[in-house]
Image 1 (cartoon, one colour):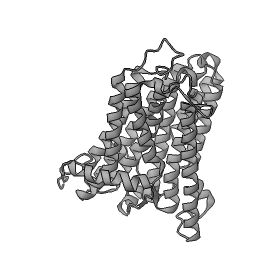
Image 2 (image 1 turned 60 degrees about the vertical axis):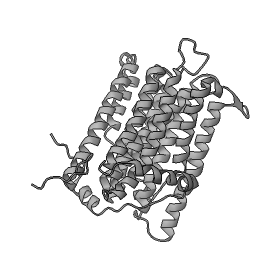
Image 3 (image 1 turned 90 degrees about the horizontal axis):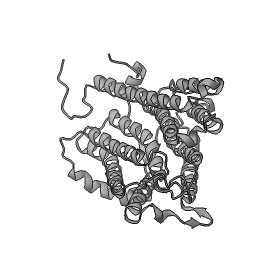
Image 4 (image 1 turned 180 degrees about the vertical axis):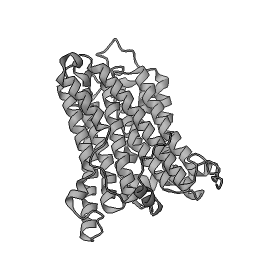
Length: 388
């Protein structure tokens, strides 16, 4: 049965949509784009750009599941947890290859769409929508490099890093919701290179290479600081500068502060709820099930981000809530309100995570199908849809 998540107004908005972006990153303009311009020539012209986008995302998912299998509790790269065997060395080179290919495919999918004259709103939605989910997997994969032990961070601090990364991702699309222009963040390509380099170093030198201090900070703690400085220090000033510039030139799409801040409400509520849960969990859930907690939070965030991306692309009003926040709130009420239920907190978190993942996949599949029906196109093929 077809489920229509997109309104008629949003579909009309897609018909009038034109992509507008600005990329001022020196790394992107002088290193990555020249490389991608050559790499895209290797792609057959009959291949649909969305195949590249989805393949790149799935390579990131493979890395996440591979590291979850060998390092579910983030202790395999820590010497203080002898019960956890180290991650096999071959895993790191596989992760490095997948990371390089995923970054490359994400960089050339738009170029391939333009060379095949198949650019459209569906490709952009898939690209940015899948990126919003990949924002969960990349920090958690990096955490497996350093582990939760010596010279590194606790699972709670990594949760706050994940919130920071997710929030900065959302800010780029919040900025476009207000200005109509997507200003691509400098931190994206930097983070991709850092992750690739970390995988390669761990493969050639082992995780023990990162057991050192810098300015009295462990290597993992130092990376944590760099993420905050890079994400907040580089993203926030540019966001507000671009919005202020649009305000001065009277090109802001939202005419009131209330409307301009509207997209930030659901993600703020998500982070408030999950932070309360992490801090006051009856069973110390963030230390006992960190990976599941990250995946649940990151998946709900991705659903919120996709909703915002749709709103800014279609010039429609963003929702002030998200329906996946309700099951999160219900589970928290059960955990904190009923002691006998609270004892099953870990089980409830796993069920909630599975539910949010399946619900988010269902949402994405039906949105893509609805757009394909509306525009009379195939998602993963350049063939024309037969006329009725």
